[in-house]
Structure formats: C-alpha cells, structure tokens
Length: 206
Image 1 (spheres, rainbow, N blue to C red):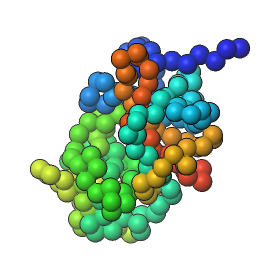
Image 2: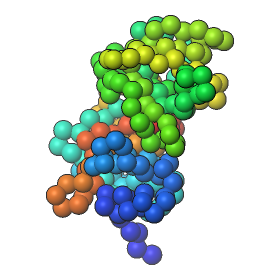
Image 3: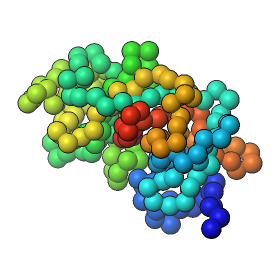
C-alpha cells in the first residue's frame, strides 16, 4: 500500500473536521502547525513523521532550522531563576495546573517569553518565564514571571518534566519522538523552522 504524505493544508482541514489536538494543532498564529509524532525516515533535507493518529507527514527542514534536544528531568531540576515553559490548565482559584514542564538551557533563556493560549488540550495555556519562589510539597508550586505578568503553577507528580538543550541534526534519528514547528511554503510543503527531538526515548511533552 502506498503511504500518503499530507501537507499543511490537509492538516488544517483535519483540525476543522475534528482530528485530535494531540495529533497536530494550530497555534495563535494560524499559519503555524505543530506536528507531533515519531520519526519514520530521515532523508537529506526532510523527515517523515508518523503522528500517533493519522497519516504520515513529510516535513522539510528550513535553511536556518533550529534543533533542541529533550531529555528526562526531575522536579529538582526546577530551581529559582530557572527559565521554564509550561503548558497548563486553569484552576478555580486562579492558579494553573501544569500539563508538562520544560526547563530551558541557560543559552535558550527568553524563548517564547509570555503567557498565551496553547494547543496541548482544550482551554490550556503556555507560560514561559523565570521561576521565582518554589513552595508546597517538594517545591511543586512555582511562580513563573514573564514580561508583563506572573503566574502561580502547581506541578503534579505525574506531569512530565524535560530539559531542553540546543542541539543539531545529529539527534534527528529514526524512532525518535519529535515536535516539529512548521509553516507551509509557497508550494504547500510542510517546512519546519524548529524541531524538538527526544533523546534516549524521551517524549517531548509540548
């Protein structure tokens, strides 16, 4: 059977027809599509990614594509003044409950700074900023400060925590889990300007 490779346009149509947001989702910028899945093939300037649900997607590398490697981390890796990104859901008391936490390498500080809608689940947000206080049991309640605001976020014990470090194309391997941040080019091809690749079986939780 011939594998079908789909374009960004098809992905967007899939979203409108109700495909799960965990497969691929549109961010606040409707031109941006996140492709989440497992790398099936690496060929020259592109990869084929198999989402958990749906057809394989051919993703071309942008000329200046940035690559980050995700590895397993622990709650103890979140320290005062760490720079983190966390998708979260709102709570009745105005705080947030984390769905995942990424701890950025110092050289990546400032990435995506702010608080804005996200696409991991319905009605969730992303908060990227510097960690202030750590309170609660085992430091699982954190404050995250970003330009223009601050959020209090609880990190449940079952929430995945990863470390993100700058990397290169050497981590792009068949079988690795990946999140590709993409846009369509003039021909309709899916082009990634950023890849987040899991190392040693790590699943990038973004």
